[in-house]
Image (tube, rainbow, N blue to C red; front, top):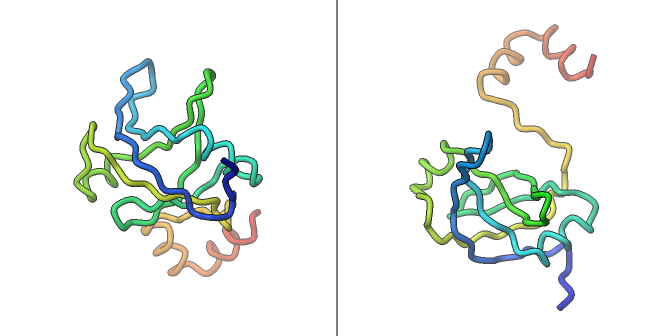
Length: 124
């Protein structure tokens, strides 16, 4: 089955927790066919919809070819998700893969300091 990289891809996956080495993260596996299709579109950056919340993430992979998406504790707590829960995920390529969400505190500081904001946004 050929998948369209520009359309949304929905699947069900469990939330897993890794306790291997330094990698103590929560993640969901991504089916290989979906991950390959999205990566073929030119970026690993994705938009994920999880329990009605839209998140920016990236498709990661292990050396042995398993694909996955990380989720932080704050999101999991907010959405009341526990390891072992089966999740319905919808993902598609991020149309603005270079976008970085700024923290609320940084946005407030930049709003108060025009000189700092000018320097920050100029990239220097």
